[in-house]
Length: 374
Image 1 (cartoon, rainbow, N blue to C red):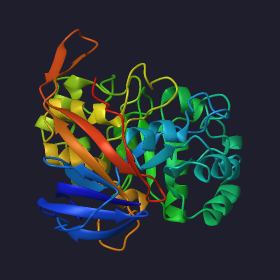
Image 2: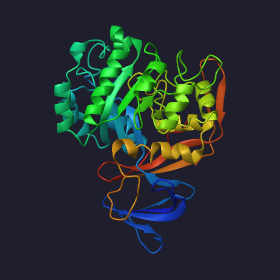
Image 3: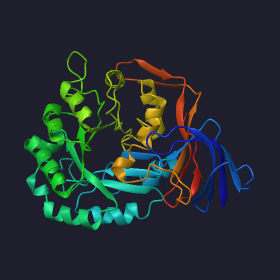
Image 4: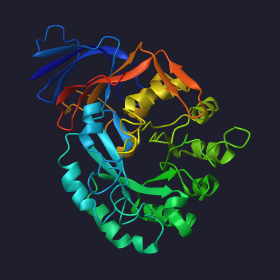
């Protein structure tokens, strides 16, 4: 089947300028980028005023249903919502990763990657996966990482009191040290402390990821006076990646506004969609993008944060070129009002809303996506 996208603004590669192009995709392969006026197609899509971008990537999701309480079906929050690539954030540890690979990664139409949990039990049991040394099996974990190098992109650690128990910061130190040995980045969840962010951030280096950066709970990125903590700014400048990780209770408008105003621009925007957030607290990644717009992020930075930037983590390509299997999406910014209420009762509103209208699955098949703007 030949599909033609007409008059879209192409964003491809870091620092690339928008240019209006047509794109022809034949049987999942990009056959032409340029002026396709004279080319006939089985289906033509008008992309005027829209952006043709590399595959939308959501680097924080939970897609291991049945084995974890948080799991939802990968395609439901992946390609069906316009995210051609999603990353599961620690649902499986080394005990269950082979099953996760067979049952989720291989069967999904969405391209699925994973941060494997440092704990061998992952999120499959008691929710305190980092609280016992007996949960750590570094030899087995190393073997699983070596067996599945194409799908495992890093190590997941949840740095919350309810997860680490009496081990405290020691659990995080062990996980980070292990990640250094296997040469993978860590994704560290921050939330209810201890351990405190002042203990966590000094352990991290360039390329490591902190998710839930704007959670707004006590002990977060802001001082008591409401300014960004010096250690947060220092690590941002050193190249630690700050990720949204919206979830059910991990995004605060006030914290996001202050952080962005002070120059803390999230490198990646993710949804943390899971069974307790999907359709109750959050509908889609597009909605998180709109919230970031409300809080002061620039339109182009938002698009980069779900397309070009995540490829640094997943190993995907940020370029779109002829002869490539289609790994693209079409993003639009609609003149539709979106309004949200925060916990303080304050309302946050935007006259523009993000929507992903078209995306390719992992085989390059093009899908039109139902509108995510309500």
